[in-house]
Length: 309
Image 1: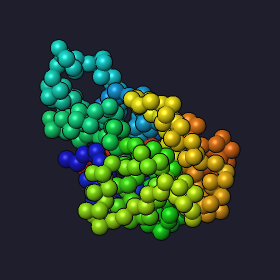
Image 2: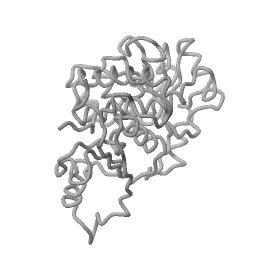
Image 3: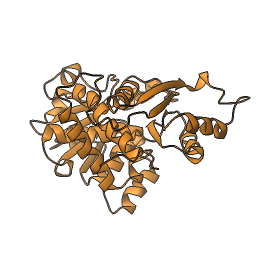
Image 4: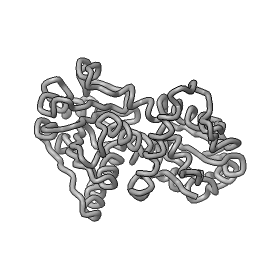
């Protein structure tokens, strides 16, 4: 049984196999309608249970389509609809019920600890649909999108992140180690990645570049990533944080420091961290980035269900 919780815990070989399978499956679907299953229906009869503790649009839709196109089905739960919690059913008992009814469990949570505890008690695979420390399904799909657009391995590209050190960046850092690509981060000093993350990169004999000068971070970039500065559940002084990031906005001028054909990507939803003219430019590939979640998550499901070839 294989879980998909953090990119850093999955081998480079398996991550590459997922991307290769996703590419093949996307090509084979060119003439198929949205809900028409893949011809090999590899997950026929399988049920994916999804639980959301945080708002979701792309993750919810993409996993729904992913399991449907593989021939399986899904049911979506909200934690406040269950007995789970104080005075209700224990997490261990809930996990046993989920394992009895379903074949896989996708959790989008506001608790890293809850993710670890479910993994401990489940007897079916668990997929991290987003947690405070990582967003692995998003970032693996982003790697897929970059390689599709650039038509070359990401290891040959310069990748830049402009913005907060959040869960998406944590997974992008892990991906930079697994896929051996150059990663430059542009952020205020106060918002550097956590020490334990940088220590892990160092333990893997890898290096990432951190700049507090946004121009230096963008210099010679093939791809620039950004994300919302204020997350939904950000428990900080929002005005102060926005002020700290005023100089770390993706503008036309900033894009001019990157390569001429530099691609802009954003996992959405967006805020004030990117100018509208950049977001809507021909170099922005955010809509392709969003729909590619379906294709990569199909192959993640196959990996977890032991059906990846």
